[in-house]
Amino acid sequence: MARALMKLFGDRLGLVGMDRGKGPVGRWTQKQILGTRFRFFPAGTAEPLGRKPLLPARLTFYAALRRFRKQILSLGCKAAFIQAPEALLAVHKWDWGSLCFWFAGVGNPLEVSRYSFARSLVELFDKSLYSALDRVAVILAAADEEAIRQLVSRSNGRLARERLIQLPTCVDTSEFRLRPLDIARAELGISEDDLVFVSSGRISRYKGWELLLTAFERFLQRHPNARLVFVGDGEDRPVLQTNIAARYLESSVKITGFQTAQKVASYLNAANVVVFGSVAEGWSAAMLEALACGKALVSTEVSGANAMIVPGKNGFVVHGRNPKTFADAMEQALQLKDAEAVSLSIAARFDLKRFGERLAGLWPPLRESVA
Image 1: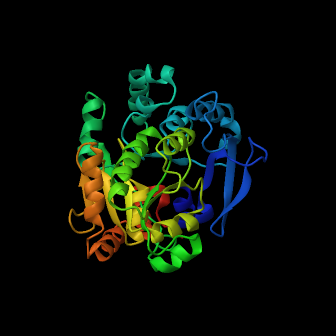
Image 2: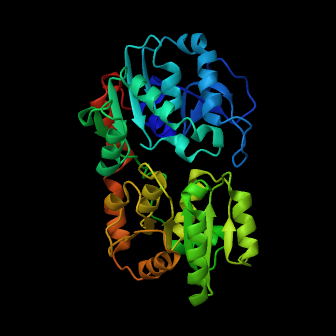
Image 3: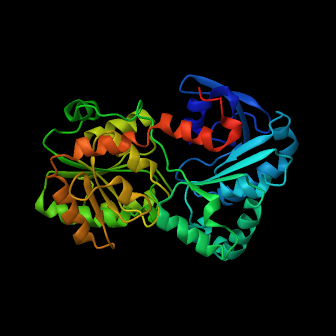
């Protein structure tokens, strides 16, 4: 989302976040994304991808924002677009003229925390977040209607449905676009004869790697030339690697580690089908990226899936978490003739430019600032 906002609104925005580099923290600097230079405030240094930090990253970011309040506000901004709940909790009482909060996912993040102590704070976190939202002018949610209703219900009357505006995730179709499968495979060293399934995103148990691996194992029994590629990194990578080895799947399953957007697009274009096994999602950006590359999708029933997948046309939404059912859907997805055209038409509805125009129309501080 940071990349999208900077491309849309350019140096009208200043970005506050955690830096993965080794530069100074606690002061405004300059950064560049996709040729656009903008102001960046590194509030701290993030742990390398895949490594579990001693303290939760959300707590570290919250503390850093509180610590650097004066320095952050020195830029003179009077409006803030916030997409992390811990950030809203840290800054909602600052001297803002207008706040916009975007729910990237409407579930409580502590419910799926890697830290056991955090899961005991679920109710307190929700209560604090609803209170902070009272100060927000515009509340956006990247979720389908059912997920939004569940959020409203969970608030026990604190959040009115009419305050929540549905705004799904977007995809940059200049980065993620259809390319010939044979060219993408040649670049990546993948055989043209293989049946390739790609899973893109964070490697976490909540992203469902175990379901995907087990379903693929079943599929492989029928198709020895099948390959499964996990494109990404995450805290569960060592566990996934151990499972791959224990099942003797090293020759058929690959983990790429973190990749640039360009390389992710190459893997997506090299796939026959893109698969998603998440337990829960907001509105999957990875799913939109696969659509923009014209791919058939197989996904569990998460928020947004039914809006992005037309069953029997460009993929299948699998109900439940049965590996056999998922493997059968993978088989059926290979036979879809219109998947490319259907997926591309759906992706066009979520294009980055359309997202920017709607966001600017919903939140006054961004009006007249679309790059």
